[in-house]
Amino acid sequence: MVLNAGSLNRRIQLKRATTTQDGFGGTIYEWHDHGPPIFARRRDVSDAERLSAAAWDNKLVVRFVIRSTSFSRGLKRTDMIAHEGVPYGIDGIKEVPDNRGFLEITAITSEGLEVNSPFEV
View (cartoon, one colour):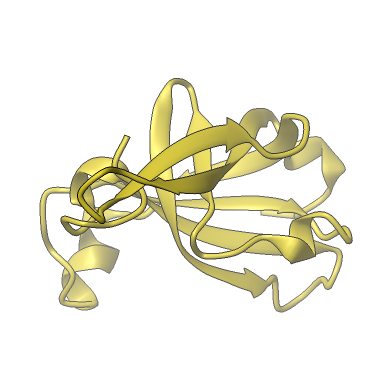
C-alpha cells in the first residue's frame, strides 16, 4: 500500500497525563487532550503476526501512521491515543522506513496494559 496523505483516513486524539499525589502517597493520573485531533492510518496487527512474535494475549495491538511534524515527534511512550472511544497506550514510535514524512505508532488497548500503569483510565 502506498503511504500518502490520502491514506490517513482516521481521526485520533492524543492524550497526555498530569499527575497529582493523593493523601496516601499514591499517584493520580488525569488525562487531557494533547493538541488537536490528527489524521492517521490504522492497521490492526494480525493474530499470525502476534503469535510469531510470541506476544499472544488478550489485547488489541494497532499500528497508527501519522505525519511526522515537530508536534508528533514530541510524543512520548507515556502518552495515550483515543480512537473511536477506545484508549490505547503507546508501545513504540518509529519512523516509517521508506518515507521520513511519517511516524508509525504501535499501540495497545488499555485493557492489555500492566497494573499500576499510568494508562489506567
